[in-house]
Length: 614
Image (cartoon, rainbow, N blue to C red; front, side, top):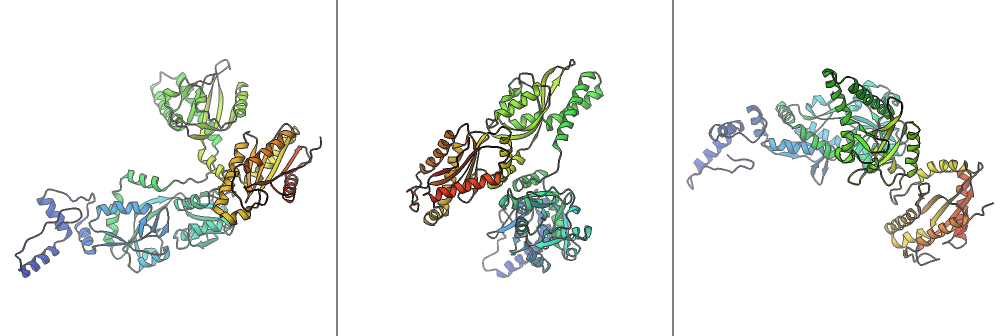
């Protein structure tokens, strides 16, 4: 009579009385699950541990099944996956919850791909599929439950493609979609001319987007975001939604409708907090949206001003006060805003600002606003900020700030002067929007993954801007290219892992030497590095570059394949000049590159530089 974690209790029969034993075993087997629960409830005064109230029919059905066979998509993280014959992912969390409520076990049926899962289910090798999008064809084989979860359908593109506000704008382009994904039917029905290309899955589709074979890939937000985070950060992005959400129910065999009723009850009893916990555990994805944050901040600032005016003029009106309290609460809880006096001491901080910084309101009021200033921020930014504010003007820009625990966050801020009745500045109000995720993604897109210094893409972007800024005052600037001597031989002797360690070591030397905000170091590709910097005179430049070359050799990284030293060394081509209108990036790069090859031809482990005309 026992089951699960309960203690089993048996009937005793005289030894040798096999006929009576057989009769009692048959009688025990004939007792239905529902009758068993009813007996326990009546005589033991206990209810079944299940929080779900199944009908007698449903309990008898489960007893007759003895085990429920389940099929899943074997490779669709973060939704689900079969890994070492185990079910993992979001749906696995839900199945664990269901198993606690069911009196019989759930058995995972192994499949190799989604199409095999669908085929197994049609052949009744599986009693249910963990999640499946309904379609006209599938309704012939499956009943569908209430949605287990709802997720947006999104489009992923290359990072440089524009935001997609409406899918109708790109239906003529090649768009990938996973084969067997029922949502393709919905798209074809709504957009008959849409150019859909079937792919094997999110990984295959995103790879084709990255290689330029497809313009975009259409998929479910968690699966697309998971794959981008795993393999394509800085290269691909989620460029827009296709529609609001798509429901994902479970699919049960159509010839056993009781199973559908059972799962609907199991889904209905999932606590809201459990849903949140599962989502938080497996989802950490955001997609690009076209939002005008300047308008949001202006609107928020306008709202704050309206609230303050109404508070000042209408204190005696209870109804308006109630409305104001509601508005203030909305602003306080959702807008990162603060106010200071003329000396920068904080006079007001919203709850949202306190939560973001990690400080309590009591810890902030009366303190200088430098309490959240990050040491990485260029002093020139604050100088420009105070110049505008002192002139009674509004300042807008991006600022890196520091939390109480030492971590950082980025904001897009609008700081405005506060004026009294006489139009005199009495303080300042700042309204901010958190752009930390945006800045992290930007940083990843311009950073070399191996060395953590800027990559060739950022070099190509910043070099023209850097040069143009110097043309205004004809500054003396330098650009160098360096190349590791006999690096192929190093990799052949010591292996590519050690070769990567050498590149990281050289990058650290460059980072230690480049200390000014307007000096930059880059990995241009392979074992080639670049440096952009300014200096006041030629002697300083040559001494600086030689100190870099000597510091790299001074790492004392053994290199038996180096013909000029027993350690790893570099050859350097250095181009310096007073910038004028005739200079261009292509010409400067070629000059430095030619000097690098002269350094190699002259014996390596040296710097070759041009002569500056004075």
